[in-house]
Image 1 (spheres, rainbow, N blue to C red):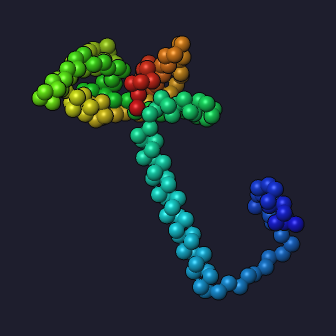
Image 2: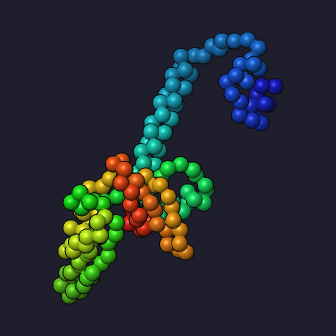
Image 3: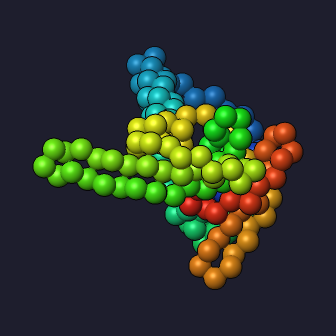
Length: 173
């Protein structure tokens, strides 16, 4: 009876105790017990590795697609994002100014412009420098509000210091 009811629904500990008429002991050989313990340890290692894999996948995930998926599945809760900073100020946007390629010599000449929280624009030469700024020092921002205007989504994010920023989803990580 107890086994049949367990197949049909998940039971709480209290429900299981109510259905258990009395406590019984089971004798198990030492070899069987060691095998069970080994399996438990192996499962524990597998779960730990899966948690690490999930953390890595979340870290490298495309946040806009992840956001879309969570919206589709209706997960509720405050989301956090990484905000890039430059000289202590949050980067609220960037654009490519120049992207020239000399195919014969294999040289790229790139220039970017970052826009800081105070609307100051700073020119950055070279992809390597831009990338190190973009992913170098980051702070966490918690989503306060999501603003959708057509196909453009803007997030209102609040830092731990209480500052709030309006940032397009493509500029958060």
